[in-house]
Amino acid sequence: MSGGRTANAAGRTLAEHAYLELRERIIDMRLRPGSALDEEELMRELGVGRTPMREAVKRLESDRMLTVYPRRGTIVSDVNIKDLRAISDARRVLEAFAARRAAEQVTDEDRVLLRACLDDLARDGATSNLDAMDVDERIHRTVYTIMRNTYVEATLLQYFNLSQRMWNFVLAGLAPITANVHEHTDLLTAIMDGDPDRAAALAEQHVTHFEDLVRNALIR
Image 1 (cartoon, rainbow, N blue to C red):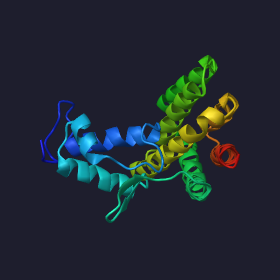
Image 2: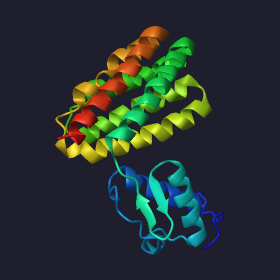
Image 3: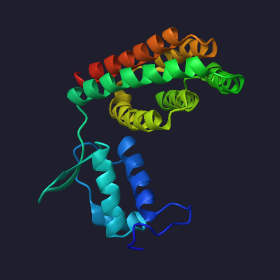
Image 4: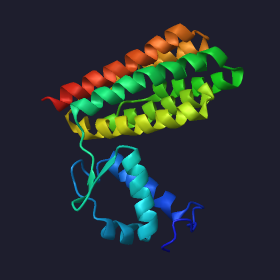
């Protein structure tokens, strides 16, 4: 069990299993910002040894979700306005690029996927902000797929995970965010219409609206 390369039942290495499980707990706030990581307890919970746990921690430190301090231990990274600005700056560039590329090379098969996203928006009853976030994630991932650049997609997903964590940190204090998610209607339409300039502008605008919502929540 101590080897990082041993596969678990799901076909993932133990290190990958530990990484994904810890990342999810950090994103959904089960592991709160500023809290110390109890690696021994987590190893028992996840059924992994020290080597895969260390590999997972190293990856999450690279993802900016954990901070390792010598002699102090591993701390879940804080959520703050400075990081919000930096993440949003990166996402404005990358999300606009993804939307532009998607619009430039959209196919009929891609339009089927985009129409499915529009159907998701039409069915969204806004029962909760969590539901709205699920729809938002499906739309972003669809655009990333249509962009067809796995290198940019990997970076986008890293920043999107950091953004999701910020959403979850302030979510309880936010008014319904359905209107923000429904901004994607125009974005999806622009991509389907093959309008790269409009798609890029709308994607950038959406990230700015996200930044404004979270900043206002953080400074209250």
